[in-house]
Length: 420
Ligand SMILES: [Fe+2]
Image 1 (cartoon, protein in one colour):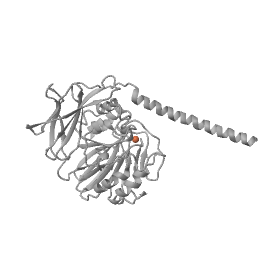
Image 2 (tube, protein in one colour; image 1 turned 90 degrees about the vertical axis):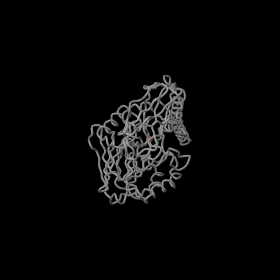
Image 3 (cartoon, helix red, strand yellow; image 1 turned 180 degrees about the vertical axis):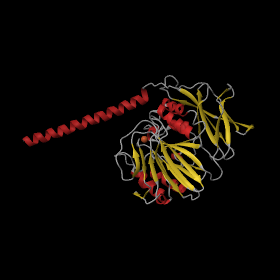
Image 4 (spheres, helix red, strand yellow; image 1 turned 90 degrees about the horizontal axis):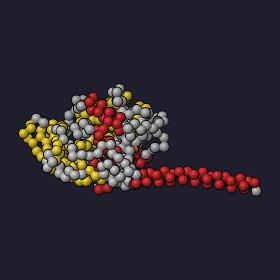
């Protein structure tokens, strides 16, 4: 009888504890849902008649095109980009922009804005261009800015890779500007997901573009989709509205979410690790099977080799990893774990003898949200609590890849190189 009472008591206790945690989880979800659908917000950077958030991407061939997008107040209806070769102002051309409204009804001080996208096509490879954007009707224009198209031949180049910005976008802006000032030759910025904390809040994107002002109008962004860019929605609607990206990916379900680009002698394959790894695998294989690039980079958000316990992504490692092995991807640029971790060259889940036989996997963070880190036998260099930017330099004679990670002050914290 006494044992029965103890057993009932224990069952009651377990039920009470379970109910408590269930209540806490449901309450948290309800608060999150309410905040995302009812609570009013303010943007610190409302739109105006002056074009801002001017951002370059590539949706076509980087050798012969550039896509520029910008924002104005909703009252501006027309937009165009004017451009010419930097060395030939007489070659001036005009491209009308596609305009669309972008609304965030809970932004009390600026709910509706106008977005413009213009694709500058028919450009010459390896050529510097000047451009400005604005409204011919209102005669309101941005300042002139510059970009350079991708080279036609295999030539040396550099690019910057950043892990999650997400939180602390002020600090992140300083990091981006520091990387730009120290590496003015870096051709583009690859950002490995979680560009903002809540991808459905336009005020956060306003902060993101404000922080990147002066850089992203001169160097294209290659964005990658993180879980926070989806913000628990089926579609990362704002991300897709804000960036014009290649539609070269694995079918409609992955349109502008997974894509590939060639730059000089390197292939860049961007994947969406929020979606099915299996469904992207056949397309990934067609991209990696191309034997013409000297260097192969892949980028996606959720790491194959995690930095923190209980954050394993076995699908990424088990479905994509064998393709990285088979077609010899040089470096996998990842994010999500809010710390720094760079593996040894890995092959089939194990440490390889050399870079010639394996792939380096990196996890980095560029914003100020940090997670603790556990030791891992696959980690060649790992540390928590530091935001970094990474500069990857490619030289052609000899074929050499040099990867270096820096903090805000410019102190180098990691490096490796590969020669072929
Ligand atoms: Fe993430």
